[in-house]
Length: 173
Image (tube, rainbow, N blue to C red; front, side, top):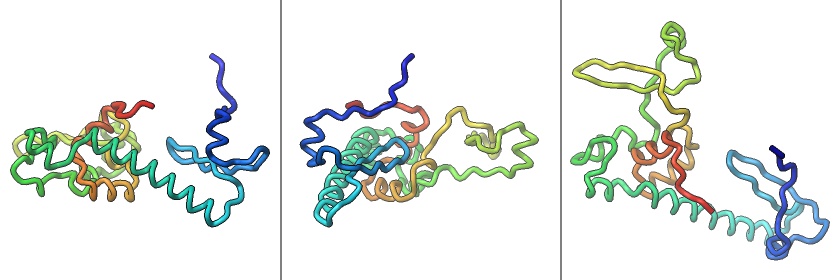
């Protein structure tokens, strides 16, 4: 399989961005993100970049909200993944900080659970079973500033957690 070593940007996109031919660019790399801006920006250019990035962020927030729904919508539909249809304040993910399961390193080692593995808890009549999770990511992997924005948008944290753990595709360009 041949690997792509260059990114090709269509000429129309470059023209629309007002990049000048031969202009040096800066590439900002983040998880699942590449942002290309001119190496030198005026204040107006920076403001225009901020406006566009804010728009992209808003669009992505809407995509997540449409995929997850809000706590209120999911409760009305009887679909609260945390099982707290009558008392939403009891939702363990309401703070979007995850399930809060911690086990010290020695106990993990004794149980054969890797230190970097996510943990799951199964509760049954006063007993809890802690195991290595069968998923790689959960809501705790969402940056805290994004979790705050998602909370303000009313996004259902339980369903968001389900979508993250299942790695379901929620957007396709």
